[in-house]
Length: 173
Image 1 (cartoon, rainbow, N blue to C red):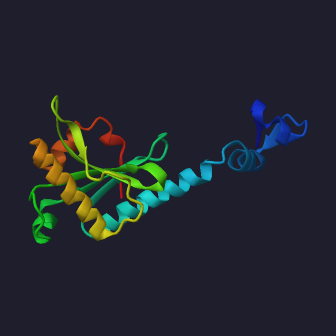
Image 2: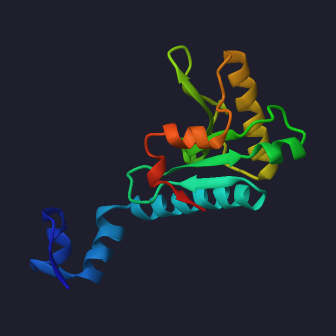
């Protein structure tokens, strides 16, 4: 397959005006966009965290991968929370996104309000190592902070799913 070449690739082409798909991929990944490989790696790390949560009984969703930004949701069902003797025995929705310095940021989602917005951070600094206990700790901190704010958490995950602007495009793991 031949394709037209972006102007920036002229040096790579050495005078040719068309290249094959394989040559284009080589140029794009290794020359034009040095962050491309890292972005794919970061997405896979995010998905692995979501898979970890799913393994422990959570419902997990991630952006479809065609967005400019990757993020996901972990829904801790109330049955799991009660089983773990954790505070706040209703479904808890936690948002996860890439943070600073290759870490991750977590937010507890709640019913939007003028006073509190739509969610509160669970961590002050991005977290780079995540295990199941770490996810539970993030959840606890977020619920504690939401309680301090007197924010109204969603009573169940379905009400959140209906209100979220992009949830119909999310992919369930």
